[in-house]
Image (cartoon, rainbow, N blue to C red):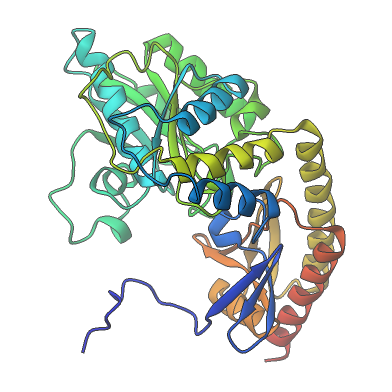
Length: 391
C-alpha cells in the first residue's frame, strides 16, 4: 500500500526534531554535525537568533496579504538585493523551481516584445539542475529527470559541459538565452572556470543573447562572494536565487536588469505566496548578516581551513576519496568508494553529507560553522572512511 507521503524520495531512517547552529538533534537524542544545511538552504545554520527574531516579530504582525497590495517587507528586500547586485528589479518566488519558470518566460518575452518571436531557444548544459517543474526538467534534459514525463517543453538546446566549440556553433538567430550554474550542485560540484564565464558573457554580448545564471545553490555567500559570478567579474542579465536567501524559510527570487525585464509588465506573471511578509522579513535578516564583507571574509577563511583538512583526509584514505573540488563552503569530495556508502557511513558517525552526480558527496555546511566544528566534521568523516576501508 502506498505511503500517505508520496514515495518520491529514498529517505534515510533519521527523524530530526531540533536544530542548533551546525547541529541537528535526532528524535533519539543523537547530535549530528550538519554538513548539508538542508542542501545549502540553512545558510546561517539552525535557529539563528536573528532569523528567529525576524520571523517571530513578523508572525505577530502580518503573515500574508497577496501581491494585490504594496508589501513593505518585499520592497525592503528588493531594495537590498538591487543595492548589492547587478539587478534593477526583483520578482519574489517561493522556490528555485519557480524562479526558473520566470527566468525562462522573461527571456522569451524579451525577444517577443522586440519583434523577434522566433528567438525562443535556451542553451543549457549537461549535469545541470534547474528544478523539477516542466521547464526545469526540460532545461536540464537528463534522462533521469525527463523519462516518462513527455512531451517535454520545447526550446532547449543541450550541450556537453565544457564543449566550447559546440557552444559557439549553437549560438544562432533562434537563441534567446544561455542558462548555466556558475557552480553545478546536483551535477557534482563542478565550478565553471572564471575564464569560461567571461567567455560566455562575451558570446552573449556578441550575439545579443541574454545570460541567465542559476545561483539557487551557489549564491548568497556560499562561495565566499555574495554571488558566485562576482569571482569572474561579470554580470548576468537574469539570475535565479533561492535556498540560502531564506535561511530555511521558503523564498526565491529572480533578479534582472531593467532591459532584460522589459517585457514583464502587469499581468504577465504572478504568485500567490511569492514575496509574502514572512519570507521577506526573514530574507532581509539573512541579508543583514551575509552581505557584510567581514562575514564573507570569514566564509573564505573557513573554506580554506576546511579544504586544507579535506586534502589531508584524502591523502589518508586514497581508497575512499579521490579529490576535492568546489568553491568556498560549496565543496565536493570525489569518491572512489560508492558515494552513497560514504554518506551512510557518515550517518553512522553522526555527520550529514549530501550525495551528488559523478560519485561525489557534497559538503554544504552552514556559513556560520566554527573552526572547532570544521575539525570535528573532518574527524567524523575520517572515522566514516576508516569504517569503509576496514569493511
